[in-house]
Image 1: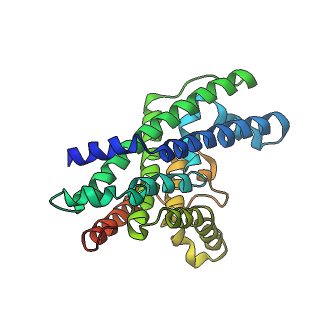
Image 2: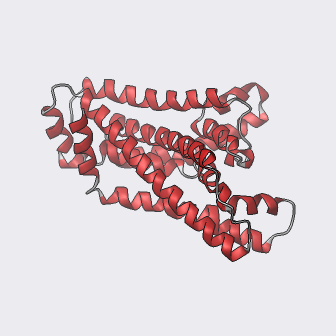
Image 3: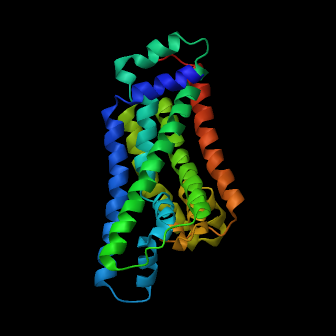
Length: 272
């Protein structure tokens, strides 16, 4: 299995689209989490400014990253998962590799392992960029430059990595199921940007549907983001009112279900 993971990581190095999409995620952090909030802090008065200032400070950079993941980072991470799962379909590489393995399931599990490594690297890069941005904005806006505690930073990194990997696993699973990169990206964009947000809105209007909110990736992600100190967990409608353990369970469940379906389906059908 280790050889399969190493092989998938080697192949991923040459997928330019992965580098581009990863750079887009970093750019989102820079623009939306820091540049836009810095402009708001400079130009808007009111009680909300204190919360904006807090999100820009180095002590809270980890929470700022985690708060960005439930909403607008989801579709980007789904695309990354799709690129890992089906990005080499037209080249015939999947067919070639699968015929050389004693069991097909090892290819899907190997790609899931490679995705975990890629997510950890991407999260490390994201946290680094966020910390540098917090230092720049703090200096420019004369804010508190106190750094974060090691424990808080570790928790934020763990929560952020779990949220990011869940979105990525869903993208990987969708890629295996659809065998189409464009279709997977379209589904991912629709689900991440529209469907989940619409369902959150419905659960706020219809009280009986409130439990559905935590069953969504963005809902459980918002619970973890709120636990790090992000107001409303980064969601406009607010985070679901549940504990951390149920939210973690939902995220692990989404990742396990996505990869499980992909593995079973890949074992029982022809490889194209």
